[in-house]
Image 1: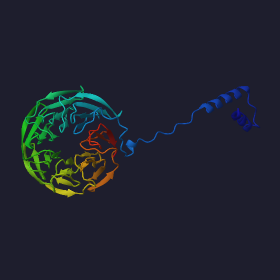
Image 2: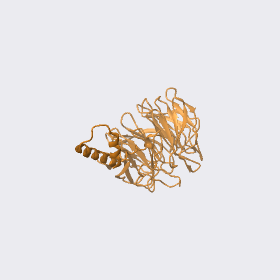
Image 3: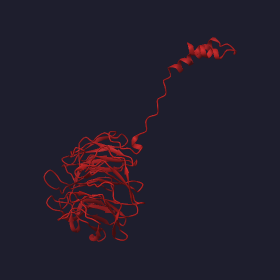
Image 4: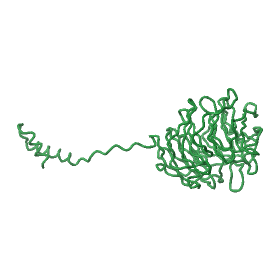
Length: 382
């Protein structure tokens, strides 16, 4: 027992150890010898270090694109539909896992999903197996089930749905598979009924819509009867009517629209004909005017734009010239400038990007790098 001999030698000149002290010392040395090496600290979670977390999040049960993802009041995310996908599933951030949430009444893509003030999610329209749909249904997080509500007066896909300050939902435009639509409808959750909400001056689908701070709704761009549109229109809930809102610096189909903290609306990307766009524009409700802002580094359509808690806007993915993009850019309204961020692990378009309550952004599905639907999921920490 060399450890004991060494220790005893170091104690020479002191009083000799008693037999009981020798036994206690031997026992202590044995425990020290058997004690395992301390474990190294766990590596930092790359999801909290500004990295893309693809591969660290369980994939969805099904590959899907042109689906919808909605943040629920409890912080979970319901993902529903997609091309030829009827199933829905719920993501739990605490476990980074998925659980089934029951099937929709019918599969649909290019539909809308709106979180209502009562916590339920309203799904409207979209393309089904053979045609555009007028049907609508609710997801109830409490019962974890789907139930139908009254259908819209007009079947439509590639439309917009905006939650109004009064709790109603404004559905605008879209396509009935043969032509763009000008009709708008208003859903009242108190009665479950739809009512007319006027007509756009120009029929459009693949446009964007944003709720303004004064309660009006801005609709911009989209595909018209003869090509991409630069025009925009305003809906006034007080008069249930539409009025012109000027034209963007250039026409665009499939842009994103984000209402900023300063009240302006940021329009990003999209396409003009076969060309994806890197340009961006700002609408100022105070002056009723449009102005160009700094362009992105990468032209993109079929992308996402997510408003972050710090007021910046995270733009991810999309496609350009048939190539799915993994790049991510961040817009700062204070400087009107873009910053490139770490790319996603996989290029994708027609995906979703949802801001979680912990500040991360959940990216799901889309058309992947092989141009087929993907079930992969990534977490971005901007």
